[in-house]
Image (cartoon, rainbow, N blue to C red):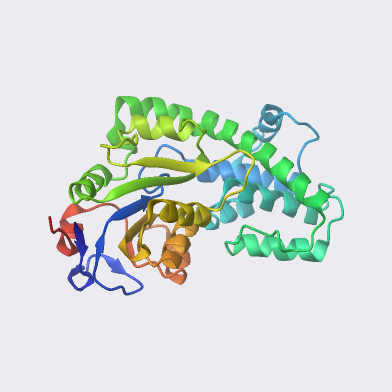
Length: 325
């Protein structure tokens, strides 16, 4: 069993919110940026949300046509898109698309039925602060339905662009050399957790098909991280094309289904959603952020993450994590 002693954390690791010593039985891992480096998604998200916020959404039901139009622009044209992409890491992609559509409506670039402009601006701000569900707001059903439909359409266009701009190329390279696209030390760390009897799960904002497949499965499979009963992770749980399910809800549901005590849970991620959810569950939360991710560090500290690391340095981790089996 994994035992964690905060009094032994070395000074080389950045400590944020204090926590008590505990035994860990389960771990929830985000994938992008936490384990895998295949998806260079920030420029793509900046391009899609920035373009939509500034120019609106084309009058077509074809994701490929939307992707083609957006692809004629450059991510650097949309600094606000970059800012939002960085600060919204971990939110549902459907929420990110909704933000862009609501910004377009605020800029009079698209028409949404029965839109309350004041409330729309409040929801834009709420999304920027990490909120995702707004069913309690007094908005017309026709407006909510259109936002859901257009968000799904834009999400599919985003995925097309993500695959073509970086993911497909990197996936092919990862199949030849997985190490290049793994966060340093992740295999060793997950192996250590498994040897301690910890059951790990992948929780992602990417779409996971009902049979467990999808583009994200292809990526973790290429990296040697495909889930299995005897693997480094037990399951892959993700999102859908049409139903907005915030990561905190996914994690809360998974914890309930598996009978996981929050105090015995380790949550590791680089997005605000998994960190916030982990804190709410009472888990030990580790943020995996690059040293240059200054804005992300600021956000994670405000969310009361426990520890910030830039990679999985086993020498450091083993100073305060031990196998009591």
